[in-house]
Length: 328
Ligand code: BTN
Image 1 (cartoon, rainbow, N blue to C red):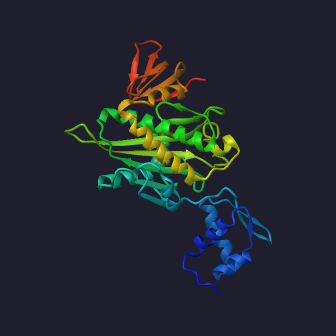
Image 2: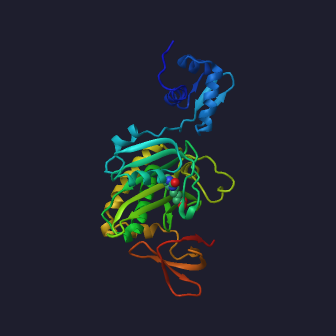
């Protein structure tokens, strides 16, 4: 009999991962772990509930969908070229990677520390919205940066992050994307949202210097469907391309692109690219700013990453916060 030191569920997953796309019989799994076939089945059901796409063939066995990957710091760190993500914690589940990263930043976590989770229980988006974060399919990551910038540069950090994610998606998936101010990434074909970014900063009261910024990035990668309420607005890299992608590979590229784009902040070199990627310039939008709602035409994105709009019945306005929706 084999002596097993891992917990049985992790061991089943390890075996299925090493036979991705192939069928492994319940008998073989049971024998490898020294447990019954019905115990194997119980563990499979839990793994499925965690989001792993495991197919069963009656009287035959189990098959982990070929694309299924497992988030792994050991896979990510050696492939990094830049300075971000050299210290990564990966969780199976967490309330929100941003919330946790902020608590680590307060305790002194260093520049580049990265938190990733396979799923989030309370994934957070802009303006108090939820961010849909199912297991086994998306990337939910938060990077702590300690930049030598002023509070007013926060908007540029957010825009740099948005350009960085488009860089990574283009390199790994060959997909052209667009940016909806300030930091949503859209598919240019379906005009549905692929990624949201939530940057949260802490500013020194006396210095006006940024103490830290947590850049939270959520990318829909291998989702094959979305709940009814998101179907018309959300999409995934899989749904756009017909291909599944390895999340670890994409995380490496996002971290390196983020490092590169953040280093350009003093010159704002990426802003022209941000403008070219913008899906809003020249378009009519509904603006929500505080408790005001109005329609406007988007004129440009200024040198500080702010949105310049011309409301229908008012003078030009420069927005550094708020949200906008395209009028179709
Ligand atoms: C948005 O769409 O409004 C922004 C979504 C940001 C989601 C990411 S997922 C990782 C990080 N943790 C969170 O709770 N939110 C961000």
